[in-house]
Length: 192
Image (cartoon, rainbow, N blue to C red; front, side, top):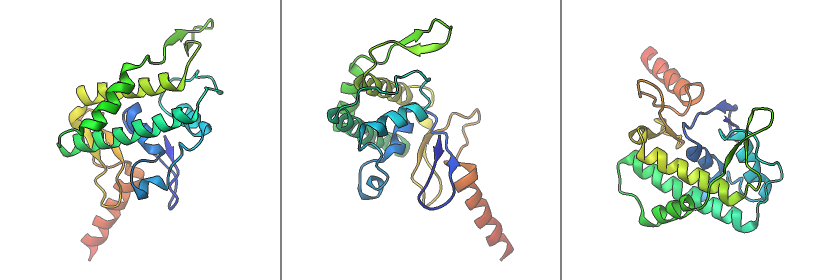
């Protein structure tokens, strides 16, 4: 996804999982709330279009105020669960309940379009979209990359990602952003 921070240049960020991409829409707490993008139906539709979900969701996906509240609640629970996983801490029971309730709902159903392309079955809903995200989180947190959920190694960055690289040595949200800043600081320190 292309992230556009308020300060600095846009950069590409690979969260490594659909569920972690939802965290880019804001989050719990006063700092993350300033980046809130799930405040209207278009915000959720925009996120779905820009995420790693395959194309084909209807551009007018029905999204209610209750759907937006559910999306923010799921996102905030995912923040707590992913941070706990990255820190090796126990999961918050309330966050687990939110995740499991969302995952229990029917997900988006894939379909084959007449032209042979992948599509989504008719009748897609915001609830099905959130179920798909929640199921992705269950897969991530119980799968082979669960031990690779990490927080960016920069002191001033809190982006979460799943390191899906072969060696599993990723430290930064993006080499073009935090990785380069770290290298530049190390280089300046070595020159002094």
